[in-house]
Image (cartoon, rainbow, N blue to C red; front, side, top):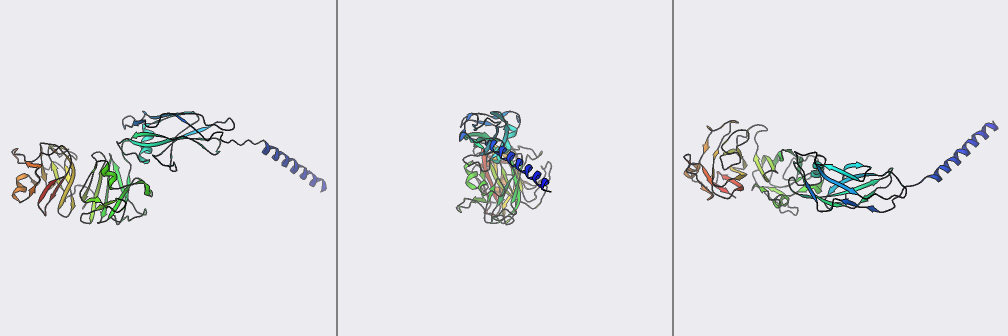
Length: 376
């Protein structure tokens, strides 16, 4: 028994000596310099991304080597973050052991939108390189600011007291679905404030009224600046269920009374004519919806073309609705309407409306209670 015990003790002693020897030979890899530098590109440069050229390079970066105390294989990661942020919510775009990396338009577009890029508008975003060796504490390069013009849009969210189903919390936010750069939601609205957000749960991703107005958006008149300290949106129409649409192609925000979940909205009017984007056609979605935005008030932000004509239809059967009830200029005059001076009788045989104001996105409104037709 004594011999067995001596043998076990001897093995344990040698194992302990071996362990000590291995620990004494360990080399800890530590940074030899606090940071390293991006060589190209430089701050202020940029790129325009295109849906038809997804494989085109969007940004190509080169950088100096990260310096460590021991020669090592370094892994580099290209990171993207909102402009002016601390990279706490950085996105990793590309990983390599080289000292250069190219990110294509297809790889960059969605992360750029997520980081706050405004679709079709040159937006500054921040890039840096993260260096790591075998899981040790990372090194970071300097930051550069690169201007990205992204395309498309991401789904967004809306919360606030003005949307009772959501309120000011993230339990049940309203969802805006993106399709062809147009964001829409169907939601109950009351006369209170709300805000749009690009990220669910992230209060810092909010887009308030001035955000859109400063970008030149034409906003329906029942949505105003709440002037509540955060400059949220406030709905001023008749409480009810509405479709809210943010069109990033035309830079417009509209609302429409919603009585059906699918198909043609029976309570809306419709605009057809050369002065409107769809011309004299009912094909597809060429007709322009003139929806109810509050009791007896119809309003739409729409691009109107100078010296061209249009007519108002009160019904849409989903096809060529030429035979549906329609109203020309004399109809409204005969019924006692006051009509904006930028709208005149076209005297074209059908006495349509002729728009004589400047070509551009305008707010066309028909109030059937006050009997006023205006263009703002």
